[in-house]
Amino acid sequence: MNSLNSTQPALLPRQGEWVFEKLRPIMDACGTALAPRDFHWAVNLSFHSAEAEHYEREHSAMIGALPEKWERLLAPLQTSHAGSIRWLDVGCGPGVMGRVVTEILAGKIGCATFLDPNAEMLRLCEAKAKLWPFPSRFIQGIISDLGPGEEFDLITCNSVLHHVVELEGFCRVAEALLAARGHFAHCYDPRREALEDRVLYRRRRVARFAHSWRDVRHRMGEMYRQAAHSPSPSSLIEAETNRQLLASGAIRIALDIREIWAVTDFHVHDQPGNFGKGISESELRSYLAPLRRQEYFSYSFFDLGNAIPPFRQIEQFLFKRRDPHGLLFGASWAKP
Image (cartoon, rainbow, N blue to C red; front, side, top):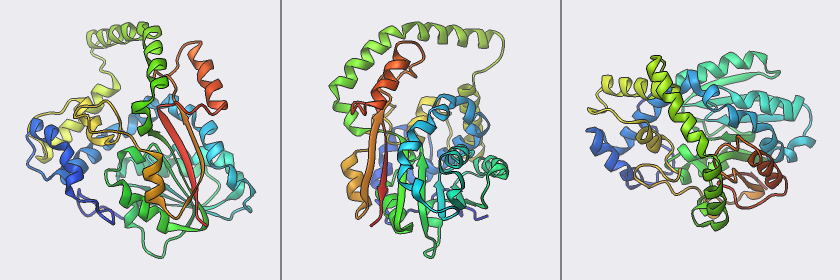
């Protein structure tokens, strides 16, 4: 297993320190003496270590919806020969993609590489891999840590790209690692075009009004947990992230959970600092050239979990008809 040599892994080509300077207001608030890139990675690694044991429960809705998204993205690989696909899962986390890809592609995966910068996430993934019908290896690091001789037929990123500050460099490395006729697929990332999408804006307003009861229920739940001395998972993650950062000297003043999310979910809209603008299809086309786009779809048409009828049913209807007005998107790209 490879290890990160520092808290500031370098993606090639580097986009420069100016990108990380967007974190400066949050850095000033917590009194860090770190450089912006170092601060970003310190928060990222501490947060994901703290989140690891809670990840699947906190993201159960996303995990439950993975098959319908990834069936679309992996459809071109259905004609692959048995055992022929060399698969790389970048930012594998606790291994949620292992079961999904196994079910969709059956015996077509020949071998898999699971890559994540966080040791605790990788440990959970390795434990799950004992049940998957293909040999796997596990690398602690980032995509540019892979050697120049590496080559893959499939590279996947599920809920990963919005964490990547140096997105252009990441995409260039991913393209270089793909074999001829290989596929790069990603999902669960914020659509930049959603910021100006009036259809989505109106839908979200209606949904927020209809779901107002959930806010009341959430506040009541928080009050109950406080009275019962049973903190919520997000409170536990916030406390443990701050414990690690304070103990290491990375910060002097604790961050709240929204500030932590703003650092880790760098491209997500509506967070402290307001620097997250989403990821656009056009910038991905530029970064991933010469790959050709094969699939693109949007979803999360109400952005509230769609927990009650009729929003759950409408969400499914809009997804099936490929409505373009979602908050999130998935896409796949093929190498000539």
